[in-house]
Length: 130
Length: 368
Image 1 (cartoon, one colour):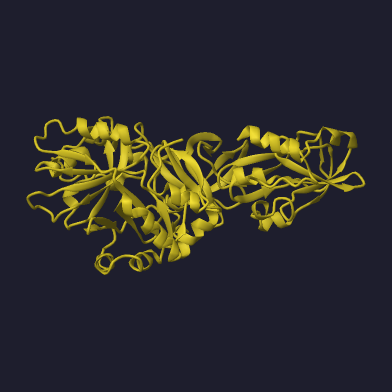
Image 2 (image 1 turned 90 degrees about the horizontal axis):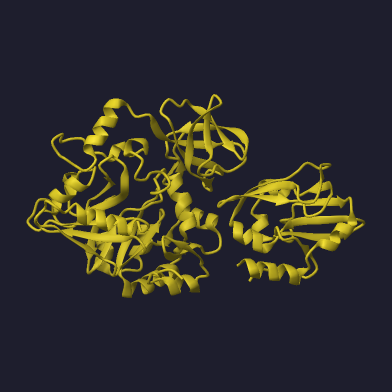
């Protein structure tokens, strides 16, 4: 069974969202997602300053198995990216909720967070997909 | 649930992630495909390949039958145990399957017989094809050997590690095996062959003994490896995968298998010979090449290869090469391809280098 921390929020496309306060969130892909992908070999991230609407392509994860789009789970502006992933993409596999984070976004519409799944909701979704 | 090999319980115990492969539940990895890959390149890993199909070909006409069935010529097997890689072709020169054939006896003796190993995904088709082509040969018997499990132990330390867990007489036999030779010892068959580009063995074991053999190897530090690593290893080694890099519609001449066609002696008739001769005299339009992507990204099968903005073929197998740290691929392209070309990667044209389809041998990069 994959790890689904209860303090995070989730979306059905297998990204997690951590509320950092002040309208800033950190985003990554879930343990379930990295497990499906297998060994991650490249991560393509957006530039700092780029703006996204919910559902836009935020980046691409390439694993040994497949290329997979990462979608913006919320609208906002990218204020930081995880530059470590350029040289150490395997962090996405080894620590998906920690050192394997992707981007930080300043939200343009905080009310969108109401639509996110909690851990139980996401666990049910993973269950239904398997 | 699919078919299970005699090692299924071992795979579960060793935390394998199982996938369906040609109707079999097989390990894709035991945690990390990339780590398993490196283990084979630098030390030793083992693969359950019991799903592959083993067929013994016996009878007084066994040799003449195989000389007709296969594009390569078993007459080249001049020593007991020697192995030959060959395509089994149809009348239009397409590849029904690729296989390994071992000479199981001394050459040119009465009772000379052979062992053939074919792919698992093509088992039924191959068995039917082989049986159909015994017509015209009075004395050929085909015997499938499903009771033999098979383990491939691959890597620079493979032989030493296997020797450390087998009986003394089997160890002696392994020590004296030449590359591409397989010999029997007390009911076990040890072949110095593989699908990784490393030294190693493929061992056929009666299935009741294979779990203990696997456990002994694991206890001796041999890493269990899944089909994921098997695929990145074989692709780095430039070895074809049936169904991806060639199939019944593809000529061996367009699949980097020209070297497996024994044209001489010219009077040997084999299935597909006429079609191949016609193709050869007409000129072969497409060939299988290697591609190397030096920038970021991963080449994937079915991506289009472009030359001067025109579509000129497609990738047949693509992956990330753990040994080289960049992406590599095999592609079937126009025979006129130059040193570079472009690949349409998810809508973007990316420049790639064109090389011979062989990337890594014995742990080291082979192209320049």
